[in-house]
Image (tube, rainbow, N blue to C red; front, side, top):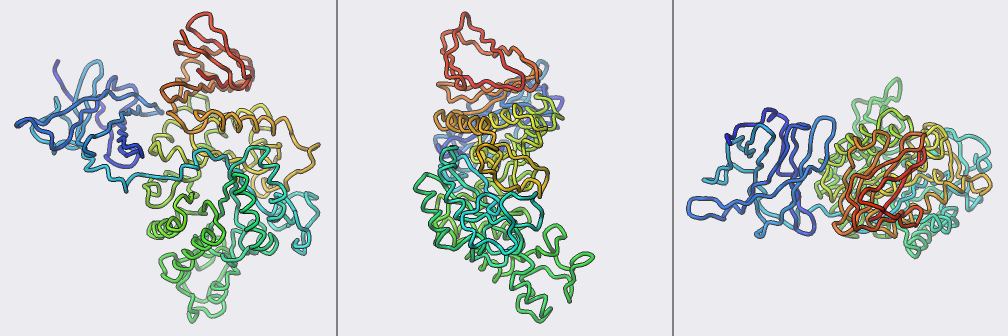
Length: 592
């Protein structure tokens, strides 16, 4: 057969780094390739040790690559190899019905060249220090986000003077209801009952607002929340009950009443703190726009200059202090993408030196690969996941096919070991409530949580979503938690409780094994994916329409035992096919 180049070679892409070639903790080297959608029928990885020669001929092997997914434009291919001497040179043989070619770092060749290794992509050495490692415990954690001012009032004696009776009116940007740390502590049994194993607190440090993202003192707990002693007691109670605690660090900007910023306001260019901020000119003004850098033109949140040595050391000590003195388990980093990379590298070294399995989570809403190379963050908040779930089940603006294509793209943006600890959420203090997004349709909300709690990554539930709180965009999404069980949706609570239990009992529902979507072509109304470890598999199927459907799972089930995890019953098979009925806006979770 004559070998010539593939027609759409401009779509073929690989780089020997990041999400296209990376090392796993077990020593495997994962290699991916991107090609034009439906253009290439077969891909083989051609590879060898750069020093393995037989005379003048380099010794190579071939490994068949599997198609790991497709999005709107591209197909993605995957292979795993374990180089015996921890180094590799490699390329790709691509074929379709008409053509074949060998793709290397230096271009395309009719057949794999073996007179020199310099043609090929290079993974010089599988250095242990370069492997991306996030804390193992994160993969099995189910998070619960608490907005402290609105979760529970445990001590009315420390309420702000203007505090309103609990839940007596709608939330506003300025009102207070007296939520505090003691209130959280009294509700730990509730969280245990739900199955929560991690709490993510929005800021608890001294601040002016009810949301506390305008910090006054990073080393003090806001008096309306309690004391350091109370917080330390909360940490101890959480840890005794198997619950991790993550705090929110606002290092991109301070609050308007941060003493150092007040000094600049008062003393202008004579202030010793003038270089703590990004000041354009003196004196400082707040209107019509501030003449100093801020978060989103908000004059009450001046941006900190993290390249200033004093600022850097101040913030690094904040990071160290709460880990060292209170044994917290994680830092969530607000507006993390606007802080310089050098600061985050040093931050990681400092806090991990105190607690090596501390979880570092960045708030980034876009492609975050530059922060996820093992030297800065362990994960980012997976907002692309959020958007796709809301568009499919909430706004109903995309099809299951578009969801699969979009999420395939998201999954292939990062290495598999990054995806395992990605922070998945369907709502937060910055977004409308999930029930509101779903048009108050409880069945669709149940589907959302069925997907959230069976997907790869570490899932997070926003307080109150589990009992059906509603609310529009901030401040509507920051209602007081409803503690009257007669006003809670207990059916939804029990639904989520059961999903969390199934995730805990079945590691495949968490992060064991590999995930792959079943082609939407099998049923245009159903979203389905498989999670498999090579010995057993779990299939999750969600019916995205309101009518009952029949779904035939495209696998040979001959000789296999199939069990419905949701209904806890075995399914009898008369032949190798398995067709299931799924209620409108329902789902199935099957293990075989």
